[in-house]
Image (tube, one colour):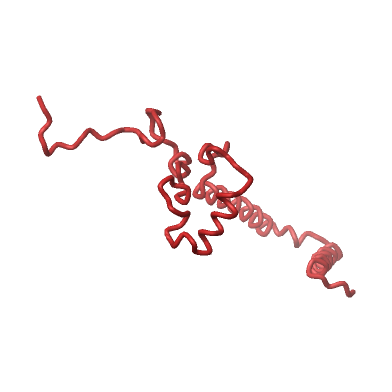
Length: 139
């Protein structure tokens, strides 16, 4: 039985641009595959502006004519497969751990158990370090 003229072709279950892998690509593969649109083969210049615009001339000088050459920049793969979303998630998790630790010490009254001398030395050391980092040398 032939397909009717209005019937759609069967939807492919893989991304043909990523090769013949018969699986759903991972997020890292999706967001990094040919992501640099300024390197497209059909381009007259890196950006859509006039090829002699300052930005396009910068790309031409410092990227396209750079002595550093790689055959396939898209061939690079981050072993950790860190995408921006994954990076933000990891940072959020780390900040949550630090916030929990600070909260735990505050609830336990950790600083209240320290001697006044220790607290003054700590405060003075922090202030002195702050002054040194900012370039103040006076005592």
